[in-house]
Length: 241
Image (cartoon, rainbow, N blue to C red; front, side):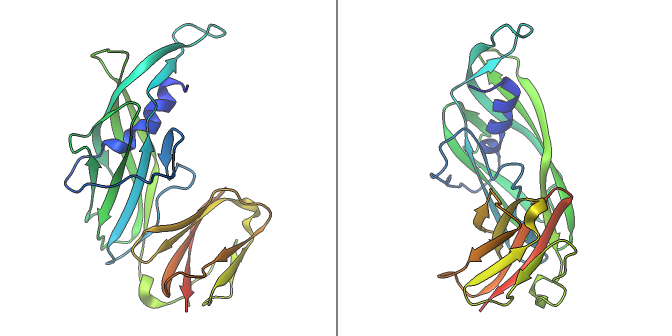
């Protein structure tokens, strides 16, 4: 069981409200948001349709520290989480939730999707405001989450001639099936997305300073390698022949 704040943080993302429905990724069973805050959202490209699926696994109960430690926390049922507001999305993008009421029940798995086409490059910091209802209480616990972002890149179809980084090296590029990234001793994780912004592969654990990406069986075209590291985020272009 998690602390109340942590559980509410995990639960928010299934509560988006808009038009389309989404299907959660069934490979995730542990309570949490996927991608998590360390992986963050995939990069987008100016003028290219973007889709970011977020899967949310909400626990059935939570444990709140009512009395000072070392007193044990008290278990409450997680009734529901309601998304109140989302700010900071890139222009041209919107969000949708399932269920459409933006009220998500405890003990369930759901999803959200951010989609659209942005025509203005930049880094967009997204803030989620949510209310968590626990233990049959009518007054919610309100929270804001501000650690997600979408980086919108310009000239994504221009090739790889401007594909430079002071920290990381990626070769061969273009490639037929495999590519090596070096300099990852400062990296937290690596996310591979296609030109439409869909996450193809995620590497949560980086062992050593290099990583080999196997692209065998993947479609030819432009991909983006997002490297989240201790000094920020870098996005490299990758072309598969």
